[in-house]
Length: 273
Image 1 (tube, rainbow, N blue to C red):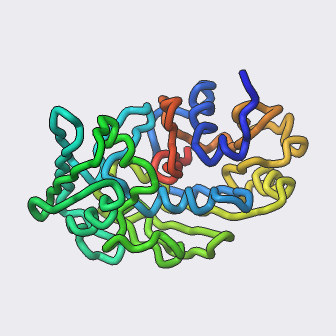
Image 2 (image 1 turned 180 degrees about the horizontal axis):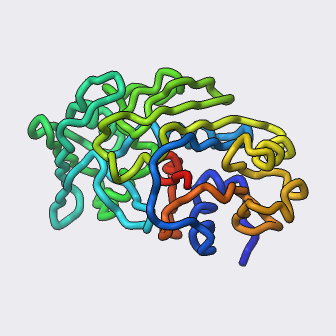
Image 3 (image 1 turned 30 degrees about the vertical axis):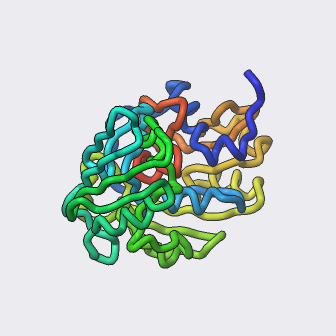
């Protein structure tokens, strides 16, 4: 096995896939409640995790690696995979209580092709070239749906349709997201009541925060400070840890290897035992 870049491993979500592949995850039945706390380096991790918590896309990659609907409920294409039609989920609200409108989606899909609304909850998208994999592409975080196509930054002003709304955020330093009551994914995702992401630049301090119980997950911690520590799990291994995780953290038992928990979906899919 070739050595993987540990920073890229965490940011892409591949570390989570390796976690599940070890069979070390907790029982597959998620539990609701609690605050999941993560310590991350000063890199793109905070923004990626926050984006995955606050925003949705038309489609998403499930924990087992399969494609499924998110803000879209269905889609069809022609024989050439150039003209696509998408149906939108009705009754979805942004965190500011504004309803999701087809124009919000049009603003995002304009970067993909020529798009037009065919009804208040459906649209037609014409590509310049055929792309049978378009629904997989639209699960990428580049295509999160925002109000009127607004920018996803700054974090403190982020307004999405995801399971968690921003309660407090400092770009590059801290994020606290609170679970949205009555979200359309209730009972299927968004298990913890809150997600807190803390930027701790020093790897040794991240390790200490996990060891002393101040956080539940540490990304790229100082390895020498955690080796042999009981009650922790290390992924992909104790000698090359991208993540160190407290034993009380649970996650899906099946995780796809290609795009496991990509785009910061930890917020929706992990839970606390």
